[in-house]
Amino acid sequence: MLILKIFHGTYKAVTQECRKVVKRLVAGESLTAAVRTDDALESTQTSDEIMLDHPYPGNGATPAFYVEPLGEMLGEGISSDRRFSLEREQALFAEFLEHPWGLVTILGRQNAQSWLVESPSRMRQYLQAVERHRLILDAAGECFVGGTHGSPRSWWNFPHGVGFSLVNLGVPIEQARAFGHTGTMPEWRSLSSQLELAS
Image (tube, rainbow, N blue to C red; front, side, top):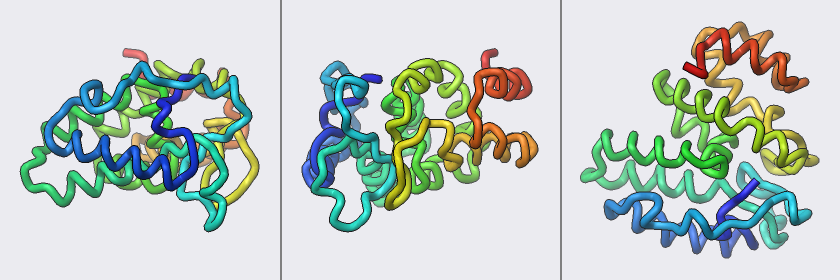
């Protein structure tokens, strides 16, 4: 999976780069203007993990793909700037979902809560992006790490964005949990058909 180079490095270095991008986005630039979306690394060509949440204290010095800071800082920037309209925020959210790496920034707990809570329309958009990008996410393999520690797992093992959205759009919690445990393609196809995500 291609992930922007600004996400790769130590947590401190990634945070510094993301802060520059957020400043431009809050000022009104589009995502493609604020960051080079073609300046990316193939995650499968490195052994570095994709960190979905804040790293455990002391672990941020280890090079990895830290995808969480951009979404978190952007959310904070939007909420503190009264000039940022809801329409502009929604357009930016849609821009993120055009890219697999953008979808991944909302897999973790913090960003899933801030970007998806109380917005069924965004939850549907999010799951439709999962439908579009799921083969790329599958090909990335067991490289995703969530929370403060833990071993790398596949993308479907993280319930924060996907599971939260499934349940809030009417999928029984047992069915959503089952997908979080096994993540098989037939299960996803069933969920996708149930919610008409491909339409």
